[in-house]
Image (cartoon, rainbow over all chains, first blue to last red; front, side, top):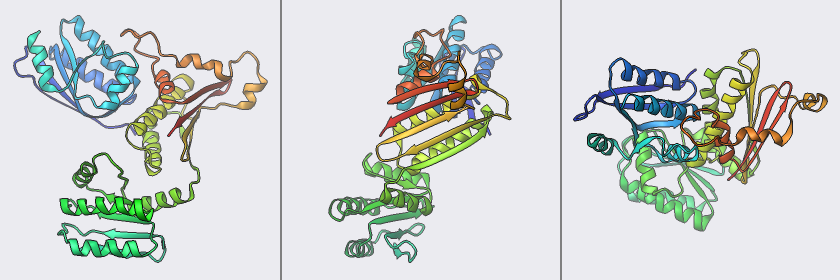
Length: 121
Length: 263
């Protein structure tokens, strides 16, 4: 009885090798691997190295999920890309801050801000 | 038209039932409010059910009534709203002030009796040691605490406490489905208490030497150095951060984690 997670992708306009990933549901110990696999699939198979993850519909994430975010950030950086997250709700933002990951993640207010930042790079 | 119903079974409770796509009728609504104020009903359930059309005027009148009802008559009003759009509308109108909503009248009635009696509510759940079942455990515990008035940031933090402790009990304890993880939660007006066991035996803890017991296990809960390379080991640190009291006990048979979170 795992939680459900839905992942939808769309083209990131104006960003070379860019993609927007929208996540809906919970990223916990039962779904974190699926989430990681999907992102690494985008990174390695589709060769999209600039990835913006829209977390507006992400209800909950635990330490396993946040570990996945950090792992992906590092892997994308090694390919000279950017892994960005945006629309983070207050509860999740607090948790990211508590574990000291705010500086390690690329966090933006919304998709528009993330796109603008990536276009500058 | 809103219907005011007084159940013969629940004499202290009045049901204010709204029909689907009901038109706002100030006179009828105020008639209901006047009847409620005149009779000794202490708990009003505004039941919108699955209705999606809730007028702004109706919400405004109910908010005003609930404030007067609470301040002058020491009564309480809660909602039963199952339609998400209607709930958002009501929540916005309350502007993050007092709002209790339940998915059905049965839960609302349970809350009333709990609130009246001020007794400690207890939930005890046991599950096989299977990580795939942890989300169900979380849902069960979430619903229990929501029914007892825990919401918002506190609800999120408690969900995380349960999730991280259960995950740890399974990942670092045993992944044998013949074994079990047990969660015991209780709540009163002062605090929430959470216990997670994965086979811990106090007798085994006392009898056998050479096994760590007591609060010296809390070193596991220290957050690791904050570098992006430390991807794991943060769960218990989060639990400790969200708790007001945190204790880990271990025996040869398993571990018991005890958390208190003040309201």
